[in-house]
Image (cartoon, rainbow, N blue to C red):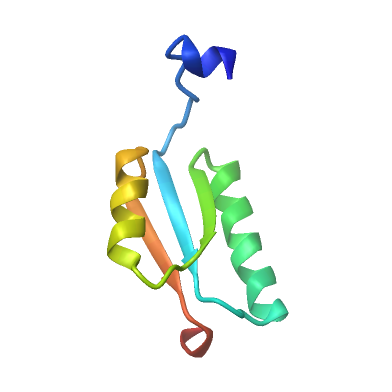
Length: 79
């Protein structure tokens, strides 16, 4: 917290990306998502994994204000 109070920025090579996951995602699909997130983190991208809220627009607006520039949505029936 002290670093952030002094305007320290977390170094990221490839920006910030948010994974929005549909509620009640099955465990096997969740593992796939987590592996994908780890690969992107290893490549230098900061990944935030969140449960998708009912008001996605508001959620995305909040995350955009926090510096997230890309959003990936995961749905149970589309994996």
